[in-house]
Image (cartoon, rainbow, N blue to C red):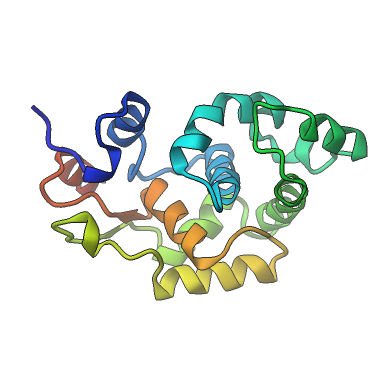
Length: 189
């Protein structure tokens, strides 16, 4: 029997996400943008709600293609607001469009979203040593720095707590607890 981080419990969707994605260093621009948007969409909601809607988000937002999303019009916003498969929040939908435009500028300046985002951790994951979930912070000083920088670049729904959740999800920090079987796997990255 595998020992996992306590947060995933026995929900099959959480278990699959935990075992295959959470904490694995991610360097794909499209997937990094997807996580940035989904973490922002989660604000005020549970992560399981977003995971259940993830495929709907991919379909609704052109598989998180920044070039396409940056061109969205009011017609697209109306279409998204009518889509029961995603979180129908006007601020979050408009934020996704704004964030796509901001990410395109970041890519112009840094060559990729990956290069920019990973610069916050000097290109290498931070490996924390937490024995229990109660030790995990909701945010860190580094997440606060990232949040401020992203906001300066025009991104929304990127507060420090969202940024830290993003860092955990994309493997910028390894916050698997030390007894979790994924701790060592993600530590080898």
